Length: 306
Image (cartoon, rainbow, N blue to C red):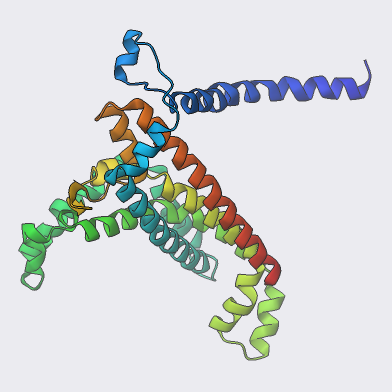
């Protein structure tokens, strides 16, 4: 047996389990789901009801559904705010823990730990803080008595509840993104900063003209990760707000903080409209692919310009 043939056998021996798992867990379920999105599949189909091909009806019904449209718009707004909040926080934390600070490694671990906590648990913890701890603080401190008003609970208002989702998402994910920025910052030659400092550049000018251009590739990665994570947000949404409070859209009452992933879940398992939920998932997938490609393309162009 030649070395080349032996290398091929070893290569495919190790790669085959991964390909098999990827096909079984991702590709085949996706294709089956795409097929069901063109049928009248429902919960009754489990009783061997005959499937009927309905063409693009589930897709057109999805676009005519106010709750789906509302969740789509809300998810885009949430994604933009969440991306900015996570990346700005993570970048500042990275600068903080790469400075000549004592115990900086301990700070790195501390900032990263929230990422190890599951989203469901995290959501319930912060729900307790928003609904019980903060109002209790208002009862103790007279100057903060407005916090004890049940009508002013953070999760009782649609806008503040969305910002609460952003805050919890940032608290959970900023530490992970920080580690990518830390790796990028530590690859910037210290001589560049030293030369700029001798030339009279202040901290802000050094960050703007040296640090940011030198770590442009890290921005592409972190923005892609936060974009996808924000669009797919589900567990924190379920445990923190469960879609509430209510809001009006196109004259119809609906869940005010129901992001797209939760809306699709509710369409499938609350409304029991499996085929329509599957069509919404396909739309979700295609939109996320297009937006991700645009984001990566724009960031890559910025890397060249910098």
